[in-house]
Amino acid sequence: MREETKSVLGIAYLRTIIIAIFTLISYLLLFFYSGIDKYFTKACLLLFGFYAVILFVLFMLNKKHGQNIAAIYKDNTVRKTTGILILISGLISLFVYIPADINAIAQIIKSNIDSSVIPNIVSATLIICQILIAIYLLKCKIKTNEGYIVETVLGVAYLHTIITFTFSLADELSQSIISHASLNEYFLLRFVPLAVILLVLYGLNKKRNQSTISIFNDNTARKTTGVLIIVDGLISISIIINTVINIVWLRNFLGGSVNHTAQSITQNIVRSIIFICQILLGLYLLKYYKTKPANKK
Image 1 (cartoon, rainbow, N blue to C red):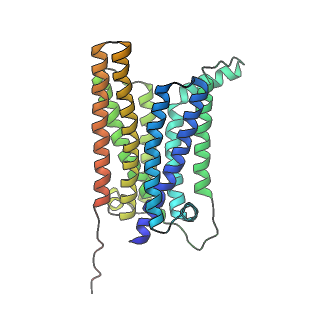
Image 2: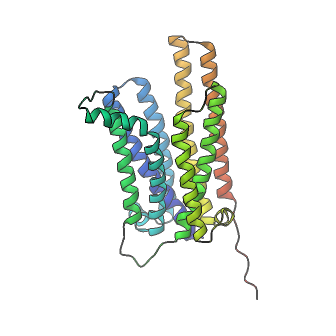
Image 3: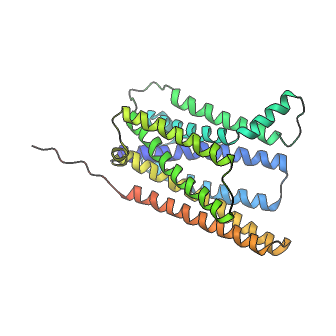
């Protein structure tokens, strides 16, 4: 039970640190290229305030179980699980940025670079760095006597991706319905690769004789997924809070269409409900515990 908890907390902590670092770098670059205003500053403070609280809680929980960042990194199962999760996230982001990346590359070839493509180039570079770090985490070999649990690594990746896919799809479809907009290339570039990744993970888990039900019944895989989607849900809620505040401010001080404001607020309320459901599911995954059957005599 103790080792199980240490793995769950270690994966959540290491992944959150890496995601927070890349998010911080991307925001700092936006500061540099887009200029600083008090609303963007407020958004950063709110987002990183959430990250700071989450990381502090995870740090204290890991410390309570005798784990520091070095010990967490040396755990092969934790490191490889974090690596595959970061790799999946990076690949999806890379596919989403394909149109912008193609445009940036075309301008570079023509030696016609303007300031508008620099953020795209920087974003693509950050995504590639994220993918390279993920590959390093997967390939890195530390001289310990411990192996790693392949079933846990693949199980967490599969279960987390299923839940992420489901809630992201619900969010995207609800936004399209409310705004009466048709699905665009962004939808295809995001969800088609995600579906392919799911199929690959399904095949890899099947080779290890793991089904969705058996993965769900694996306490480590389920609880790790629970913590991860809670963290993701809280970060999404922080972004939504800031968005709604800015919408109200723009309506009150700059004027604008009442209908557009109401639609935007409705979209963000629906998004909030979706992410709150995600957090509640995460809590359920943490609370649910599959007991092992007693050995028959």
